[in-house]
Image 1: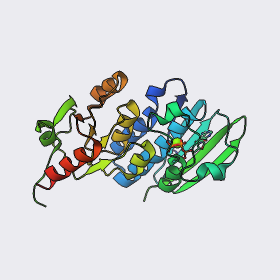
Image 2 (image 1 turned 120 degrees about the horizontal axis):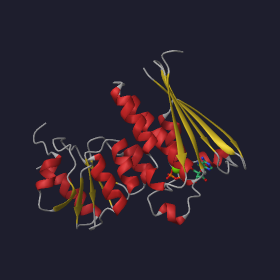
Image 3 (image 1 turned 90 degrees about the vertical axis):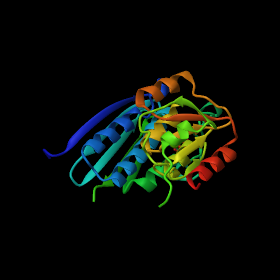
Length: 141
Length: 115
Ligand SMILES: Nc1ncnc2c1ncn2[C@@H]1O[C@H](COP(=O)(O)OP(=O)(O)OP(=O)(O)O)[C@@H](O)[C@H]1O
Ligand SMILES: [Mg+2]
């Protein structure tokens, strides 16, 4: 797999003001690779939502992005509390965001639905008390 | 396609105060977009729109960059907090301010585009 590029980011839950920087960095790298704008937009939206969730709902973690000629794989691995009911979490409008987070503009309960919508494949594995791993794929057509 | 309204035209319009000029001044603005909830804006904000909101924090800026809006207009006299101001400068994001509420601000942008 010599033509796969792997990028790694560690996401901290402390520094709220830097949330979104990993997604911005990936976006600018994909732009430099001249990938189609629709692909870049899908990756940017899906990854940002996942990155923000790691910061506000989990305790941070690590993001791995693998770019191959045919697809972009985004793996969000957090050390947060886990998700008890994934189906409920995926429901548009469902949010447990506290007031201080809502006052920043989060909490519409649309992050996970956006991730589902803008990725071509998505899977969530979560263990309560341990953490959550979300894997998303965006195809390059 | 008739008249084109650029970011620079908005900057020169006296109804807006420039908070940060940014560097993509020749982009033509296609429509106003209003939303304060980030993950809704994330999926609905059209590229090259003028995003009108009352949320002046870094997260607004992050979303603006990711979805390529032409500029942000903070309505109701809202301004950027300090961290956000720094980020706007660093990333050259155009941020304007309007003293009018969201609807009136959007209506004005709409009228300017369709003048
Ligand atoms: N990584 C995670 N770890 C633990 N819980 C999570 C995680 N991601 C999402 N959740 C839970 O799922 C809910 C729905 O997430 P979603 O991203 O759709 O909405 P939100 O983050 O609350 O608001 P929005 O994304 O619209 O700003 C969250 O409120 C939270 O309870
Ligand atoms: Mg979310």
